[in-house]
Amino acid sequence: MTHRPLHPTGSSVPLLQVRDLSVSLPGPRGSRLQALRGLDLTLDRGESLALIGESGSGKTLTALALMGLLPEGAQVAGEIELDGQPLLPLDEPAWCALRGRRLAMVFQEPLTALNPLQTVLAQVMEPLRLHRLRPDRTSARHRALESLVRVGLDDHQAHAYPHQLSGGQRQRALIAMALAGEPDLLIADEPTTALDAVLRVQVLELLESLVAERGMGLLLISHDLALTARRVQRLAVLYGGRLMEQGDAAELLARPLHPYTQALWAARPRLGAGRDQPLHPLPGAVPGLAQLGPGCPFHPRCPLAQPRCAREAPAWDGRLACWEVSP
Image (tube, rainbow, N blue to C red; front, side, top):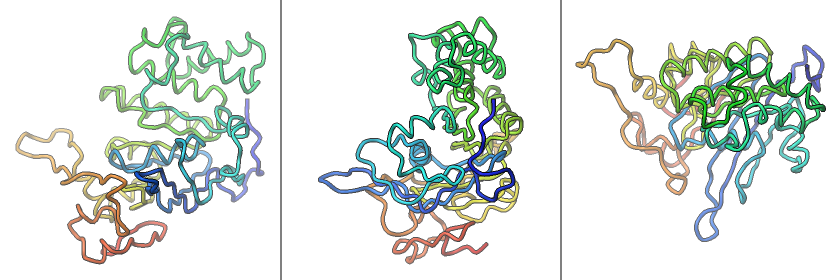
């Protein structure tokens, strides 16, 4: 099963194009809180992009905006296009027609994302029947089993309920459900958070192979720069709802420019490090939405911060947003 793209093969139109995306949420006493500010992202077919940052940086909110699942009261500005099709003007029925078919998302916690009253197989079959990709029950069941086998689950596990599976198996079931409709774009929100170290690598390797095999686009959301960066082609570093840095993953790690990217990389655990080699955690914490001012959101924690950084946010130049560092 394949989806005919809206644009012909070889078109210069990217699979996903995000321009100047901003999201505000309701605040106290009728105020508005800016949660995302001026995000620019591009993703092509067969490409993987990781959105990196600490908890509270705006990563999940970005994913929800791309899926049309923002909370009630959220206001969105900017542009989101899938194969050149504007998504923000869509009404809810049009969004529903896209979700599960052209857009799919693997949520962070599989135990709460899966229905405890249905078997895994029944849940993987659901989007196939809903979008009439496999209208009869027999073909939907066959396709769902294929999807589950592809992610490493057997027939016994397919007929199990979520609570009967391990954390890694539940995460694989969520991936199978998202992939059953063969989406053009897969968004995976912290898919390895609840897993041990071995399973984390296995899940990322699975996603990496599926991107290469199916030619879809993958937006991977994670706070773990060290683990994720080696499994994707490009990285985008987010902090306080703003892009700090973006670029080729290998190049960015070889030469991180933004002080925040440098701090994330320095804070990573090092395999084989002795007890006399301490970790270098970032001082301070990610600010809440009400604490964000007009300047660079990282300036209170930045070793290079100058007075200008608190007053005015640096412009995004396609690679970097920093007053004190040049590409």
